[in-house]
Image (cartoon, rainbow, N blue to C red; front, side, top):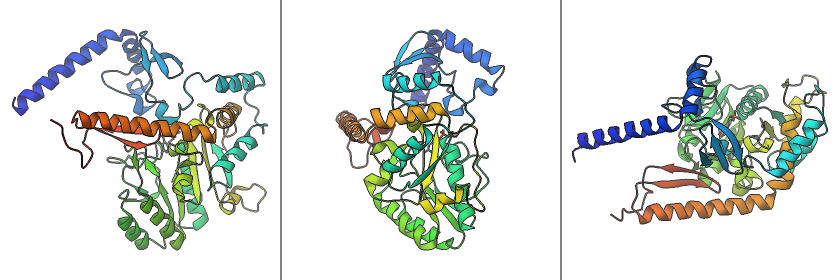
Length: 377
Ligand SMILES: Cc1ncc(COP(=O)(O)O)c(C=O)c1O
């Protein structure tokens, strides 16, 4: 077959698949059409769009989802890591139901927030004190903005392929909607380049923000030596090192910082820690977080209507104390490691142009052979 023959065969197969999918999912299609009248592209969360139209779901239970068209799916996405507890964990459900019975929006403090904060401080080595937000994006905004306010410097080092939320996109072409901070984008996992760039900007650098494993960027783990270099070089020039552990915090009881023994100045969290409800958090060294203490002379201001909302707080506590305990985090990630190894054995046996990268329970598939592996064909 010539290249053109292959291309037209692939195009033909794709158009047949689109036709089958459209025929099979009329309710999802109709919902999508209706939504396009009132929402741009029928969408309020860009990442969920897929042509010709995305499926819509009516029910989730355990690790399964049911589409509007009545089909049952196994949920391998797990809400981009926020769905760690699945769709119907009885402990999480009980916590939410009990909390709902007591009312939801107090506009005041509640009995949950300090307990969740205490648990987070006990688990993540860098977090001596913590504050809550509603999303990982917000948590990263606050971590960056506080580093700028505290250091009096303006530049923020980030890495190619990084994703820290809708306003902090450093994969591909980036995003015109990125927050207008002075970002310096360095190559990921290149300790030498990072060292050079930190040295070049040493007097202007407020923060170095990094995912200890690129999540959206394809589950690419950081080299420990790269993170160690970021730790020592940022400390040497007075910039704050921020680990975005919004995704990676689940990979060990105390996140990847604990597993790799590299302790940043600040850490951002999100996803499953709110038990599946909206959640974000930023925390770190007590002297940094003390700047937010409203009793101080000129406190940094961080309000937020839903920062301490009872549902996220109560579901989060139930999750960390009764479901994703430290021993469960270890057991679960060992299973993930075993699954990824098995998947890579299977693709190697078949000589497929594929590989699964990641750590523990987070993995991504790439249509590229692992370096060093040979085709069996
Ligand atoms: C590493 C990382 N940081 C931050 C975020 C943003 O979190 P949120 O979607 O809750 O704003 C995400 C979301 O996918 C993420 O993967």
